[in-house]
Image 1 (tube, helix red, strand yellow):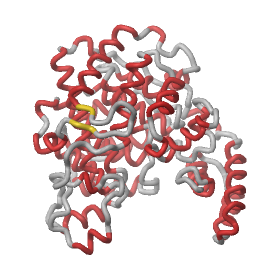
Image 2: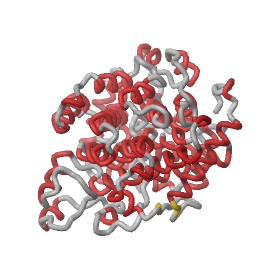
Image 3: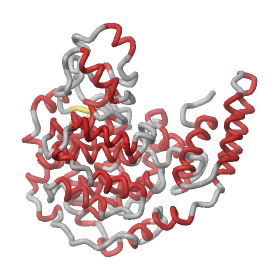
Image 4: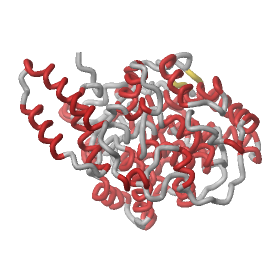
Length: 462
């Protein structure tokens, strides 16, 4: 049986793309892959898998280009050495507990609403999203998707996402349906509650194996999960034969680390690093560190561009990720029509896969800047932009949810959630969002009490 994302031929296809982006010359391997592609008969299926696996293993032993290794370290000590010291922000210890709960609840609700908005049309190109919305006079987007009034031929041409997309339509919403974007936020809460702020990457791996069904993870996460089952520990679990190691999977796991480190982007970024390195490398790790820092900063900083800089302060400035975000910041977003901004983003980053870290981070940052702190405008921007719509809507919604606080979020987006999340994650099905927020508040207290702030980077053996 061939399992999606574990198929060696599929992995080889994306490994070649990944290696080229890293700066390797893989011309001989591309020729070998073309030979595999030409053998389409069923009788060659096993041969193709075997050869693809062999080529993948050969590529895995390829030396990392010197410039890439210098500009994009995986090691937390090397990452920190590359950063410029910044003035420390006020921490969560100075925040009123009522205000802290309101902000954290805003993050959870904002994340769920943004995720739910993007869920039915995940994977569709922005032109298709616009075609769908215009068919029932719903462009530009200003509410959850509905199929009421849509032509039947369009519904057949563009079926809603198989994984609970139908349940995410306005007329069918009963709660927040299961989604990996919320599963990971809840799982990370469990990891922190179970192990405390000194948790390690091995603790993360153990929690995944105990609590998370393997078919509820995708791309880099599924490869890493398979590596764990085969006895490969972090950080090798994130790199070995894993062509998706710079895709978006770690980036969508950032939120909880920001929630529990209000006003402390550095600590949030390190928590994110411990999590991300189990499944990702370089760009993949930086995406999670960046957004964890932004989310932590959102408790005490309200200027969006300054928030983005707080995230950049935690990732290597010479990295491809950092350069991409700086390019976004050079666009006159506030003075531009949103569709014109997205046109520029597609020109700059449209060559990436629709679930890569860089293009989706760029779109999320742009949607935050253009949204200017308005929840509805921000999440609809993120979703209309296409690519990984539920992930981007969730991350953007989480950040603005903190900025606004739960009490200020528009009822239109929050009431349909009915304060409930469905999940196959052990112990979390039908969780109340208010309960999760309160547990996160308690986790903040534990982080502030138990963290050894003088020795955050005590070891490379997390």
